[in-house]
Each structure stands twice: as structure tokens, then as C-alpha cells.
Length: 281
Image (tube, rainbow, N blue to C red; front, top):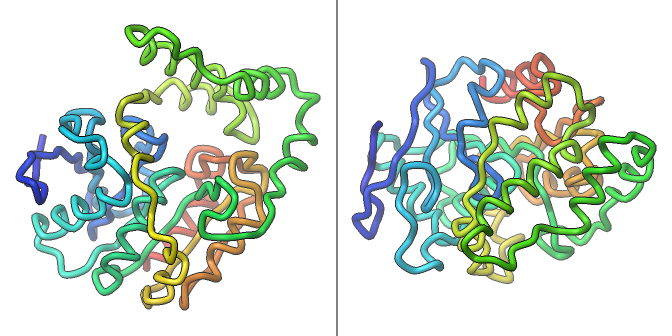
């Protein structure tokens, strides 16, 4: 398992999959083991997938703030240096887009291309002020039994009252919520959902530091091409906020995939691969 030294000299792990030009891929969750990304629908790239602090084989931070997505941008730049790359082709999924965006905001000149996959834009005011239209997508699916049960679990929240069992219960809750994240709940989506494992302390640390108030304005300095890929049935993100995010970047664009939820490389692999390959070149 390859490692690289973080700025504080902690040894962090990363995975490598496939061949081709390098693509650094940041998993979401927050703090989900990155194995759920798979090979991103067979993209012809050498996927370099870091284990974020406190996730997988990377140690938990000695201070929670070091595990915040804003702070972990320095770890991503240390990975770039370790790989000997002048600039990064970078992608992030879901909560991983927060770290990818934080990296772009702090190191705009070191971005070659940026691919943002189903970025959540909650709470309101994070990057965009467009009201979410996720409620309309949710209402359209309440009649589906699996979706309705997942929605109820999501609204109830996890039982974290016992610290000793909280990590296990958090993962149980995530499994109960899983159908909410997909546009359908067939064997394909169910098999994928079983690959996901969350690290509760790392998830808490991930949000322990707020980004600067001028984060949206900083993105105007990102001159590299940016593509946002969203799902037209993604109840996690809605459609309007995702469309608006692309406009924050001077060279931003967006692709919305129909019949797709929060995991487009799983749900619409051919369409996702075509959009990503066209963008990555």
C-alpha cells in the first residue's frame, strides 16, 4: 500500500487502480472508505485514491481540525508533490467535492482539470444561494416503499447516544438510508450500497472547520476547466444548486444525467463514462 508524507509528516495512504494519465479521486461520505468508488465505471485513467485522515489505513488526526476538509487541502497538495505532478487532474464525489473545491480555492494554479460528481450544497448558503429543489424530487418518490423507508430513517437520524456502539449504529443507519441515494433500488444499487463503510470520528472531524466566507469568490481564480456531473433524480443534491455551482467557475460546465441519483458511475455507467472521458480528454 503506497503512502506519502503529509505536511505534518504523518504517513497517509492511497490506492492506485488502472493505467493511464493520473486522476486523483476523493471519496465522499463524508469519511466513507474510498473502495466504493471502484474504477469509476472503467475510466481509462490511473486512479489515485487517498485515504483521508481517519479513514481506511490513514491514521486519525491528533487534533480533529486537521481532519477538516478545508485543512486536508494541504494533504492533497502533499500528494501532488509526492507524485511529482506540477498540476492535478482532480475529482471528488459527494462530500469529497468539498475537499476538491477547497483545494482548488487554495491552490488554483495547481489544478489542470476539476471534475465534481454530485456535489451536495447544504446547508443553504454554502457556495450558492439558490433554493434547493430536492423536496420536489423526494415527493415524486414517496410512493416507492424502499425509498419511503429510507426517507423515514434519514429524517429520524442515527442513534449515537452510546459512544461505544455509535460507530456501528452510524453504519447501520447509513445502510437503512441507502435507497435514498439512488434513482432505483435494483440488485446493482443494492450491491454497491453494501460496499460502503463510514468512519464516524473522521466524519465529525471533516466538518470541524468552516471554510472562509469568501470561498465562492475565490473560485473565480480557478481558470482550469471544471465539469459538474449531477443526477436528475438526486434527492441528496437537487438540480438547481448543482447547475448553479458550475457558474462559479470561469470555465465551468455541467452535465445532468437522467434516471440517475447520487452515484452516476454505478447507475448510468456508460453515460457517466462518456461525459467524464469527453471532459478529461
